Length: 172
Image (cartoon, rainbow, N blue to C red):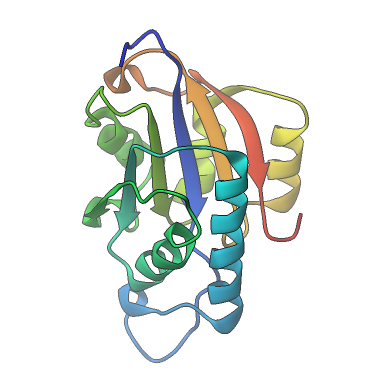
C-alpha cells in the first residue's frame, strides 16, 4: 500500500441506545437501534467499501452496533476495541487514527457523538455533491456514517485534509 493512494475513513455513530438504569458505558441498543445497525451494515455493504480495520469503542452500544452491522458485510475486517474512543474529543480521535499502520487503506471507526460528528466536520476541508449539506441538516443521528478520503499517511491526518465523499443516515 502506497501512501500516495487515497485513504478512507468511515465515521460511524452507534445506533439508537436504550436508557436502562445502568452506567452510560453499559447502555444497550434499543429495539430501533438494533434494526438501524443492521440497515447501516447493509448500506455499507452496498457501497462496496472494503475495510482493512475497524476501531470500535468499548461501550456496549457501539459493540452491539458493530456486531449487527459487520454481519451484513461481505468480509469481516480486523476489529480493535479501543477504550479511548469512548467520550473522545475530535483531537483524541485524530491522535488515535494517527497511530493506524500505513498498510491499512480504509478504516471504520464506530464511536459516539458529539466526537464523531465534530471529527467529520473538522476533517472535511472539502465535500462532494450535497454530502456536507445533508450531514449538517441531519445533525449526525444514531447509526449515521460519513465517508472521508484523504491523501498521505495516517500520521499526516489533521483538520481540513479530507474530502467528505458520502454521508448516510437511517432517515435518508
